[in-house]
Length: 351
Ligand code: NAP
Ligand code: ZN
Ligand code: ZN
Image (cartoon, rainbow, N blue to C red; front, side, top):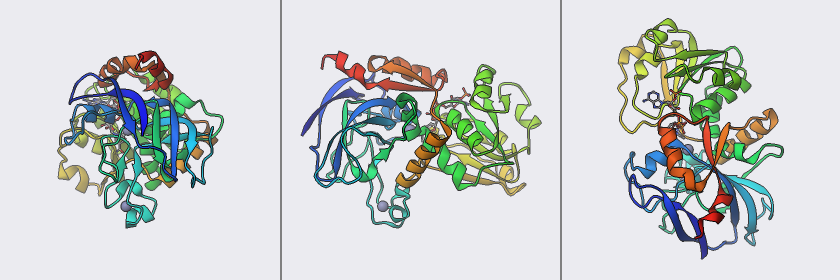
């Protein structure tokens, strides 16, 4: 067993605090990773507050992990000690179902093993990236392309793949108008990736305060939804909408942004159901689709794509001691655009 230092929520909604625990020892196909940076996803907050139900405590959140290979098991073939690697939202799956065989492990029929707030195949709780080390089977570990700053790479492991996967699946590209609703961690990656795929991007945000950032990120237009009539004015102008909003909101107003045959991609996961008006869909044969992160193969493809295009996340690096303040700022929509924890700061925790 490997003694590990981290930060955990001990019950729903409790402030995160330092925590020591044990990880499994390195098995023949495992890699021991020394974690260097871990991004702070809104899903961490939903789960640490048990907003989706079924949370397991104590919980060590974190599924946007980059680090250095510290040790490899005897049968590991894909990685060597000292390499820079990444881990995303899951660390195992059944490997035999139709979804797994297609490289869509995120839709595993038996249920993937979440990086945290899950149970591994031995029935033990999994602990995530707000910690100094993690042990993961090599088949669920990603290569990080050279030349990208590591703190900016960490959020690609969730925010990056969650936006890349549906944009690719639905064929977003040149000549398309894409609306990105909500300019947070996922939203800002949707702008960057949508733009890199050739689409023209418009950001829909609650206030005017992110206008300049949106332009800098690559958006060609910006709409503030707090201004009355914004969605009506832009009705039927988009081929795609990607909705990254974390709280209940008026999806019908945004569905009306779509042209006939347009596609509404829901990736945000508000804790409560969102009402959809049938007329918002049927009158223009619109599609409402959802998407969950991405499989290992596609996550690697996304990382390589980001390497080729020099795409990383805009981050604010924090020591782990500031994690609870960071959560508050995420909830206020006041982060530009992802907090990333510098895991070296755990050394100062005196654990
Ligand atoms: P985030 O950084 O907090 O961004 C969410 C954005 O939504 C905010 O920046 C804000 O944008 C907007 N927003 C927040 N509250 C709102 C409200 N009441 N009404 C309208 N807009 C509001 O969160 P994130 O990390 O990007 O995650 C976004 C959501 O995606 C979360 O629910 C998360 O759990 C989910 N998620 C899903 C997947 C998946 O696989 N499908 C993966 C990761 C995360 P503005 O300030 O611009 O208005
Ligand atoms: Zn996430
Ligand atoms: Zn499976």
